[in-house]
Every structure is written in structure tokens, then in C-alpha cells.
Length: 279
Image (tube, rainbow, N blue to C red; front, side, top):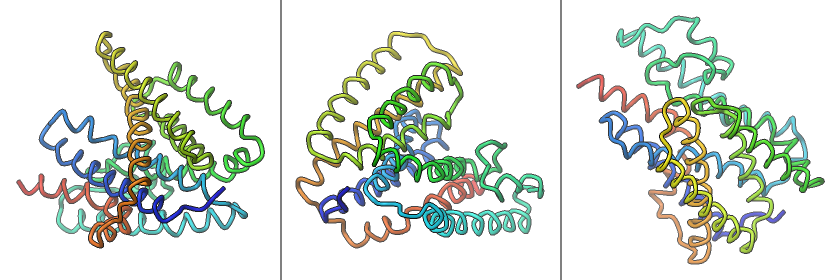
């Protein structure tokens, strides 16, 4: 598994910044009940795909060391954020937050609990934590039993699509992350071209299916998750192919945004909610 070249690293950085802009734009337009927010939400799926892609390219010699590094990078800033803004809520009387509401956040299990206002987007951190937990195992299978890994991934995708009908299904995001690992592990022009064509065809089929069918919630919510997943794969494949070929460098201002993309994700939603609250 080869490390990222300069052009590949630049491409990933640009796609990450684009994903961040899409997510922030999604939450802004949601506040105005704009339908375009549905499309802009694909930024979240791009983040899952990027994370999986990058870990598909690196070696993980020690699972314990991997978990420790993820804990420091993801969990500690998250806990600081939660405590800080829970304190702000209490001081200014914005919203009452009980210690019982904070328990799921303390263990990063908020995706399974009712969200605190302004913390609605934190479900992502629960899911990415689960993705990180399975990463060392997935990496071992990719390296030693790639055909078994791909077969299990296809089976998991079919099972989730057919049987797991839950809005914002956690299983779908994990499958997308693991697919990203496959893309990173087998990163060649030929594989990327096949991925673009296949995801493009599947995306077209899904769009026709949604157009002709009369799905209602929760069926629409469930299948739209997969529409976003396939759209993310298609967009990532196209952008990655173009950006690595032309080797566009990220301006310093956007490189700064790229470096703090996680921190931006943590705070942006609550700041948007604060503006809405002020109005």
C-alpha cells in the first residue's frame, strides 16, 4: 500500500474542504427549510469516504496505538466542546441541560440518544468511533484476505439496504467508510474508473427508482441514505481523478480550513443555532 503522493494529498485536502463547505451550507439552508439542504448533506458522506480512503492507505502495526491516537485527536476535543457549551447554556439560560443528558456524550454514544439542541450533528462522532474500532480488523482482512473482505462488504451492503430500514442508518455509514478503505487500498486509475462508472450507473438507477416510486417515510428516509452514499462515491471518484491529474494546490487560507476541519465541524452547528436563536 503506497503512501499518498503530493498530488493525491492535495486532492484529498481539496475534497475535504469542499465537504466541510457542503456540511456548513447544508445546516444553514436547513434553518431556512430549503430543499437544497438534502443534496448539500452529501458532505457528511464524503467525510466518511475520505476517512476510510486514508486509512486504507496506511499501515496499522498496533491497534492499541491506533486507538490511543484516535482518542486524543477525536474524543478529547469533543469532550471539551460539550462541557464548554453545556456551561454556556447553563450560564445564559439558553437551554436546561441535565447531567443525565450528558451521560451519552461522555461515552460518545449520543447517536443513540435524544440530542441536545445545537448538538444534533454529534451523531457523526459516535459512528466514526465505531468505524475506528473496526479499522484494525478491516485492515487485516484487506491486507491478508481482500476477496473475503470485499465479499463481506457486498453482503453487508445488501443486508443493510434490504432489511435495516432506519433513518440515518448507522450501518450504512460504516459500510461507506469500509468502502472508502477499499478505494484507498486498491487505489489505481483503473479501479477508480470502474468505481466512477459503477457508482454513476447505480446512482442513475436509484434516481429513476425514487422518481417512479411513491415512497413515504420512513422508507424514503432509509433509501435516501443510500442515494447519498452512492452520490458521495461518484463525486469522490470524479473529483479525485480530476484533481490528481491536474495537481491543484490548496491556497494557504483553505489549507488552514483543511487543518481545522474537525474543529469547524464541532462548533459550526451550535453557532448557526445561536444565530437563529438570536433572531
